Length: 354
Image 1: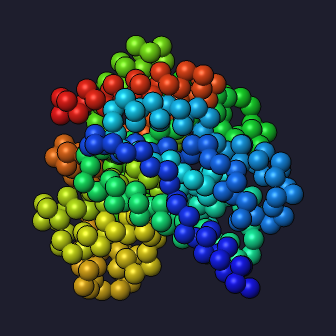
Image 2: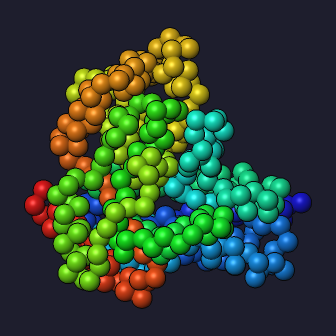
């Protein structure tokens, strides 16, 4: 029916992100901020009768307090910022659209963007519009960040462990009040897709910035401590930004043809498991066209030596771009604004010195 098609179009074309305007040269993003429940409705079977059940599920997965910290930091810095329209409990912007193919070597962070709950409860025709919304969000972030010098993700995490831990009957393990998370996607000994083309320890957060974050948080009464996460992470938004910059920098330095670098920088935001690039990287197909140089890069990144990491360190020094992923413990949500102001102050000082 035409109303059905209209609904389909509306689901696909609604805005993907809320935008905060600003001119500071760093983008702030809160990928798991609280979002309106009403936005989820059209995608879910049985809506609105099951509103309470849906609300309960969505509330499990919000980063409580992160939104307030994010808003405070954007305001204070006059920085551009984005937060999602659809809640993470339905679609997680910090994951690739498709999960990693299940292989024995890798289970962590292998899931795709749509939650297990979402896959069970989606309307049959909701998948395409949901994918369009997800891809629209990533495209907006790609465009907004491409000329900026930093990409900051603001999160909050469980005080005693993750929702996963709780649901699987794990014991509580109290986390740091605040943590800087450093990770490279799928940077195990078995990378797949574009992860093959990054040093396994590619880092975007300079030590100097981390020290400033530590000092400014301390002034506001927050103790920065160790991150509870492994150094092998998901294809998070900040990593997409960093990977795109890495490929562009490699071209500037003559390690990759410019055409290949631009293609890979696009794939970093569009498809981190691109089959064509994978076939070339693994030597199954000869290098050609905009895939020239990929096999060579994959071999360099994969060899058992320090050279890939050394190149990554040169990139961090020279590329003049940075990422920061900061976590606040969720029980500190009442002080989220102070947390956001501390992060803003650290970013302001870092930018002034840099």
